[in-house]
Every structure is written in C-alpha cells, then in structure tokens.
Image (cartoon, rainbow, N blue to C red; front, top):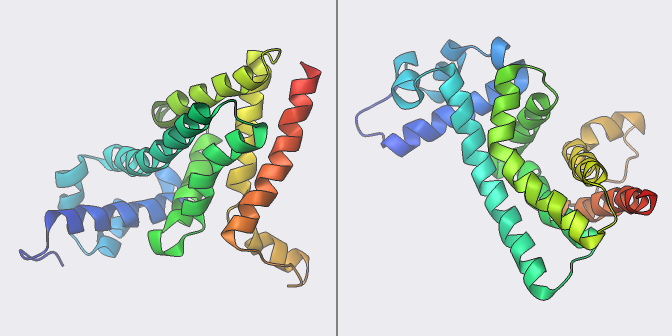
Length: 215
C-alpha cells in the first residue's frame, strides 16, 4: 500500500508502468483500473489523483514514452542533416533505432510499450487514432519530408508509405524471438539488438529504394 514516505514520482511511475503493461496485455477496454492500482501498490483513487481518468492514464503513458523516443529521433535527424544529405539507411536507422533499443531493453520495460503502440497504431478507435496522431504525426512528417529530400522525385504518398512500412517492420521486429523460436523448433539464431537493427534497416531500406525507383 501507499505510504507517506513514498515519493510522488515513485507513485506516478509505478502507476505508469502498471498501466502500460495492462493496456498492452488486455487493450484499453479490457484493462482494469482496479488491477492496475493493485499491481502499482496503490489504491484506485491515486490513479484519479495523478492522471484523472483511464483515458488520462493512457495519454500519460504514451506521452512519456513518445517524448523520449521522438527526442532521440529528432536529434539523430538533425545530426544527419548537419553532416550533409543522409542515405536511406541512415534515415531509417534514425527513426527506428530509438524504438528498437527501447523495445528490447528489459530493464526499461520497453517491450510492453511497443506492444501497446502496435495495438494503438492498428486500432480504428477514435481515442487510439487521436493519441497516435498527437504523439507521432509531427515527427513522422519530418521523416516523410526527409525521404523526399533524398529523392525529390518521390511522391508524398510513396514517402508516407516508406515511413509507415519501415515503422511497421521495426515494430514487428520487437519480440521476434517469441515467434521465430517455435517456428524453427528453437533453432532460430538469436541476435543482439545491434544486429537486429542492422537487419531491420537492410530489409526496410530495400523496400524504400524500390518505392523511390517507382516514383
């Protein structure tokens, strides 16, 4: 239970982690606020105190993680532009690396976040669409423009597809061992995060270059 000696940031962080895991596992509608409070070690009223509502909690979870990931993306993109015209591979690495590194870091609990992001990204629910747009449309627009700068003949639609299809590849790569292991009767050759990023970038860049040639 919550005690007076427990710092506010400890309480709110515990709720954020518990909520993230619950939303990722059961979806927004299936997640129980009572269960989230129990896992966080607080009473349910504390969730309302810090986040207002179930919707407010989901918004806070996504805002916390997206701010962290998007700051790195923006910094990487700025560094690439400062050095000259980036390659397709460099652009894809710049926006996927922060997500994959977080998603494969067990200590930071990133897998649950990426799982939740996948659910929200493919949802037709108005709340999910709004949260994804608010947190990611700005940075996505910058990379779409960057693809068009690298290939001026590329249409906006193809540049958007280049971004979203590459992003989908990156999201799908998180937790790949959970599927690949059973498929191969556990003969799957597991790789570390750096090797995984290289594989994803190589795969995605091939598709993006095809879209550029098509344009």
